[in-house]
Every structure is written in structure tokens, then in C-alpha cells.
Image 1 (cartoon, protein in one colour):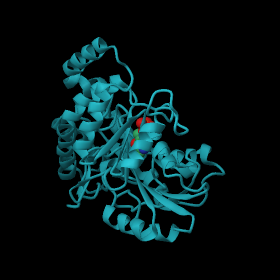
Image 2: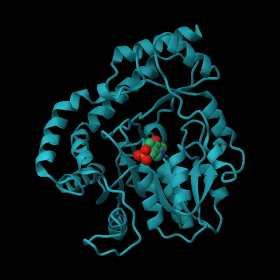
Image 3: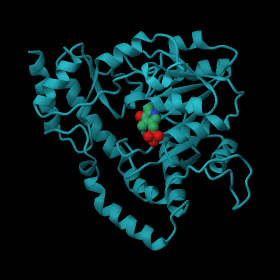
Length: 361
Ligand SMILES: *Cc1c(COP(=O)(O)O)cnc(C)c1O
């Protein structure tokens, strides 16, 4: 059986280092906001080449805290891609703003820069871009639109740790919001997240809000929340961060096998020199998606669908999101995510390719 994901196998190479870090953590007796979280924040910001990184509880909170800190007028509109994972939309709602869905480019699966401007009104204050599947959005045209229209850029980097656009890392174009959910390219052994920024005063705000609005003990300057990156997760994340480029390179090697071995009966991700893609997900598209998924399972290959239901069709979004989003629906109907984890071998991927090719033959 080729699993789609297997967290035990994914983390097996790091177990000894995790154990060493855990014992040191245990001996320290310091469980919340200690040296290790501080060190991880510094190491991750230097990896990204951004001055400030603030660890928080998870990726959703990273986006909520980032959006809240902008203190936009209530009812402000925030543009967001219609095919994103629900978290990006929930963050806008929880921050008290209005999500306005913009269709993606059918080739990159990311927000289509050519469609953004038609949705800008006097209420639009920010764009929440999502670097979906590990590929950066087109950040030069998006940055240009944002500065022309005086919009903030918030980046959902939950799938794009280490991904680049024209040599610059995602998360450093606007305010970068990361998730360290275990399956992500940089995954903890539980929940975790971080916010990355160039703006020192915003950084101080994030740091204050994540801890009850307090920087000095028992002094509350802002209306905050409790969303701290757990010290124990910082231990594990410091280990994983050392291997992030190796993990990303392995996924890129597997992606290259998919690119060269897969039949042209399926639509593969676009490749372009502007994007350094980290393939959090390797998706293909085909009108025979459901039959192919079934066929692969019969041949002991597990796949996933990211995502089966678009946000505007979710029950929770009834009365909240309106309009029709045919491109998004087309992606949701035809996309299939193939195994591409750190533990998969080149021969696993060759087997997946051969099985897919035989389905179409
Ligand atoms: C995983 C993910 C999130 C949410 O991260 P959590 O840490 O689970 O809150 C947000 N956006 C995208 C695109 C994701 O893939």
C-alpha cells in the first residue's frame, strides 16, 4: 500500500533529535513562551529573510491576529481566492470583515491577478492571497495592484514554507501567516503557527495580542487572545526547520518524476521559472477524477482531494458567501492529489505514474 500521508513515517528520520530536544525541554521546566520559542522565531525569520516572526497557536489564529491588528473599519472587504481552504475565509469573518471571493487562474490555481481589480470597491482594504499547493501567487502584479489601491497584503502561507516568487520567499511580501499543522512542509507534532512581518509596530502588536494583550506580566495594553506557539512544539519545529530545504527538495524531486512520467491525459501543475514550488500538494486534473481515484485505491494507492467542496458550497457559508464560481467548481470537481510526502521514494512515485498511465491506456 502506498499511503497518501503517514506522519509516523514522515517524522521517523527526526525521532532521535526530537527525543534529545524533548529531554532538554523536560529538564528546563519551562513550558510556555520560553527560550526555544524565541530561538525558533529568530531561526524562522532568518530562514525567510524577514525581520520579525511571532509564534502563535495555529495558522487560523495567525490570520485572525494579523487581520485584527490592521484595525480596518468594520465591514471592510477583504479579497480572497474562491478555491482556498475554508480557514482563510473564516479568518476574515472572525476578524469582523467581509470576504469577497475572486476566482483563481485555472493554470496556477492561485488568485487571478487579472480578476482582482474588478472586485475592488471603496470598502476593499486588503487582499488575502493563498499560496495554494506550495506555489506562490504572482506577487509582482498583486503587489502592484495593492500599492495602487492602497490595500494591505496578507499571505496565507500554510502550504508554502520555503516557496519563492522570483527568488523571494512567500510570507515576506505582505504579512505572512504560517501553519505548522503536522502534515505541512514544516510540520510540528501538534498545532502551531507564526506571523511574519517587516513592520516593527505590527510585530509588537502580534506579540501583545497572542498573549492576552500583554507584554509585561499583568499589564494588558490590548484586547488580546490566548494563542501562543507551544514551547514543546518550538523544540520539534527547530529540528524540522533544519531539514526544511531537504524536505522541500525531496518533494521537488518526486514532482519531477511526476512531470516526466505521467501521461498527458492528465493536466499537471504549471512549471515556470518565476515559481520555486515546494509541492505541499502535487495535484493533477482529469474529468475521470472519481474513477481514477477508485482505480488507484484498488491498486493500493491512496490519494486525496484538495478540496471536494468549494467554500461557497459549504453549509456553514450559506447566507454568507454569494455568487457563482465556475472555475473554482471545475477545480473541485476534477482535482486529485497524488502521494508526495517526505517518506515516499522515487519508486513509489514511479509506481503511481505507471498505474495512472495504465488507467488511461
Ligand atoms: C492548513 C491550512 C490552514 C490552517 O492551518 P491551521 O494551523 O490548521 O489553523 C489555513 N490555510 C490553508 C491554505 C491551509 O492549508
